[in-house]
Image 1 (tube, rainbow, N blue to C red):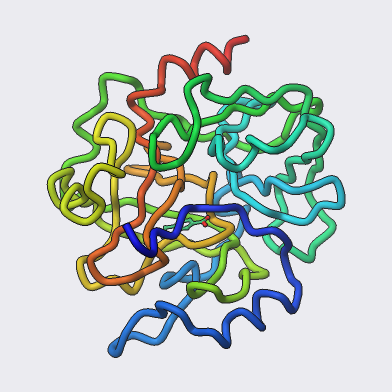
Image 2 (image 1 turned 120 degrees about the vertical axis):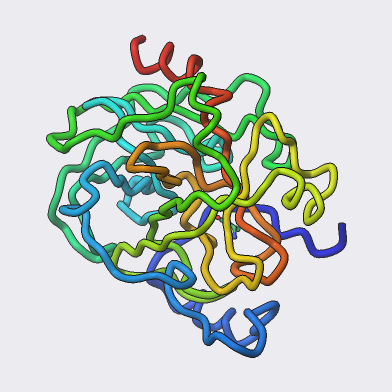
Length: 263
Ligand code: 4AZ
């Protein structure tokens, strides 16, 4: 696959780097729709989505999202933290703006990464962070392993993040959200071939593109009916027609996550 855009965390937030890269305008959504944030969507707040966490470096520069599922447990993507150590990351809750200083900052006591994780295109893109400080925010429920029906094609899902608002664009200072329809496994397989691992991934997005997760949204939630059902993982670029976003299929990993949440 020639131009597969492997998901990677945004290196830094709120720098001029991303804006400079945007001038390359590689693979921006074509013709019809001008790029809009998350790509597409609207601004929101951590008051509306209190379980939405920033995963940051030690200087509180956001590079991924995460979902608070218990007061000291955050679900995120393996690829977000595979090159990190517990001491190198922080989790920030209750902070709508990347340049804010409010909310709750916690250190991380333990990082659990799926033991089989190698690369986003091989699946297993799930991790659980154990926080040193409890977050005083409402947690999100997550799917049980039995709830595989939530991924019916066409079901509306919600994505959230501070990621770039266009491919190779800049991060959003304010948290953003968008809704995208779940894509059938056959449709996603047609787009991504063998990189789409049906047991471990689910796709969401419009056939015409225009609305999607993007760099820096990784690790954040895909909510279906208000329940955490996926983790932002990867895709071919962002918001491109024919290339939906790929999310970790959380039903597959629900029991493992529960083991970590209860540990
Ligand atoms: C990323 O790099 C990323 N359009 C996240 C989501 C998608 C692509 C890349 C899906 O974090």
